[in-house]
Image 1: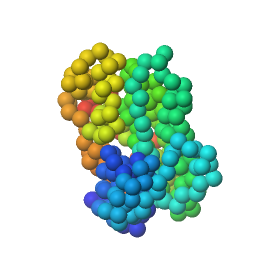
Image 2: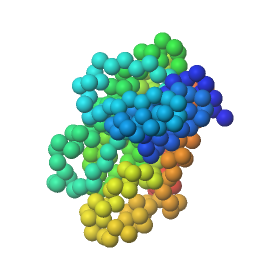
Image 3: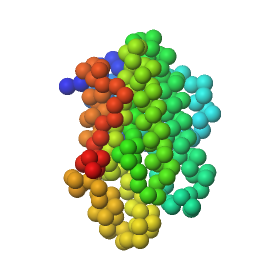
Image 4: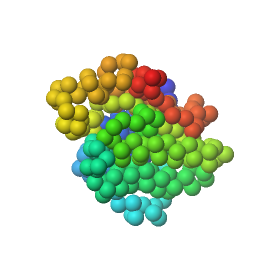
Length: 248
């Protein structure tokens, strides 16, 4: 059992999906959790249930994060959005928005948290990447680009933080049963030219040996272990949880 008693954790996108599952796992292990989310009402609801704190934040407004200071032992960069579209139809402003949320914001949050982690000699950074941080799929240029960039940021953070007791790792799930995945079914059907009821089998699970979606609680269980004392030698790693997708 991972004991996080006395630790403080910050989870972006913590009001739903993977983020909420991570927050629940951390709170159960004894951490004081801050739920950072664009949806302030949901963030406050989850925070109240977990006896934690809420932070209503729009991570696309990166200029507001430039001088931020974060006092936290654990940082989970989880917030993200998705757009499924061929490159010629992909709006440049949407591409830039996705990179701000999933690359620039994690960099700025890590930058804000590291000084305190260095002072305490302890820190755990968990970046929720994706199998798309290791593999590409058509029609997801911004998402694949962002997740590949997050992998590099995570590894660089691991190298810089090593002598200060700070670890940085990525978790790389396949398709997870979350609102983010549910919202892209219609777009996947459109770009692939198939009915929506065939998207799960023919697109989402096509490359996975285990033919089911990942559960948020499964991702959270790995995140919880990575934040504990027994994972002190695990850093700069990317942990796949993709049903065998990346084994091909």
